[in-house]
Length: 397
Image 1 (spheres, rainbow, N blue to C red):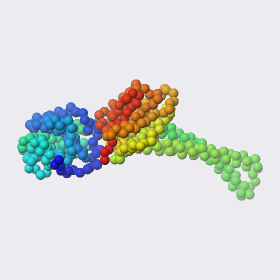
Image 2 (image 1 turned 45 degrees about the horizontal axis):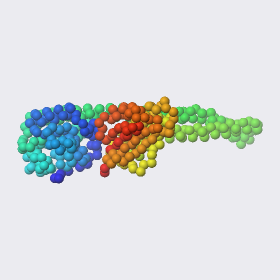
Image 3 (image 1 turned 30 degrees about the horizontal axis):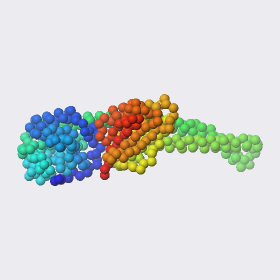
Image 4 (image 1 turned 60 degrees about the vertical axis):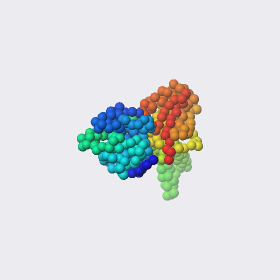
């Protein structure tokens, strides 16, 4: 394979590539744009490409050879479009076999001789190209260049709509996932307030005894009954303070766990381990799963790095578990929810089940989350008998 890597790895671009942008389903509006581009420029091939770290992904295509259409992408190093992304401007190739700027793979394998591409953007980040390719050498007219540039703006608009849709859906999913955690946070703060209210009288009793002791040390005379009664009150107050401070410490720890879990929904990480996700989920769902007997995190012999963004993985699992807890709310306390982890090669599967959960309940609990996820390629949800199985994409590097 004749390849030229001109772009390198640019991690800052990764956050622009959302599940909706990379979905392997056709988008009618993008498809119309590439068909229009091919027709107006009289080119046999037109593409909307997204240039990733390793591949160029064909988000929409017209006229591709069957093998490329089926693959929906190629290795990035053989693409013309990486030059468009690198330079963030128009690229015109009029005689590909003799153009030293570009890789020769498409020239040799598919007879490509000319190319015209314009950058496409999501939130001011160049993510790929709208381009046309021809099997004959040609120079594109100024009118043709203007037409393709105008169509590239339409691609920008459509991709922005898809990205905006994702943010809205993810926000809704995150709200569903965090609601029980916020309820637990409020509940955890109650002992702090109660401790403050109970602590003031206790501290007053201790102060009273200390003042009495100071009076005696200065030579004052205190009746034995007064001394005994004040000491007893101080000891009782000290014991009460111990209980209060223990309760406050426990509440603060619960609050910190909830806050950390909620923060994970808004902190993408380049190295997210499955164990990190499960611990965050456990903190988020503790309130909703307590009546069911809790949800222990299993010991992991397999702890892969996930390609699925951490906020999405945490929100998906927490949302499903909260739905299960709500569905089983009327059931008597059980032996808790069970998590089971399976290595499926390119994905890792987390199974969620409960002794009181039947297939119909599992299906109902998963419906809302599956609708919110849409066609995200990095996560999948399915129901197998009475178990909800969630698949997360695993990093290969």
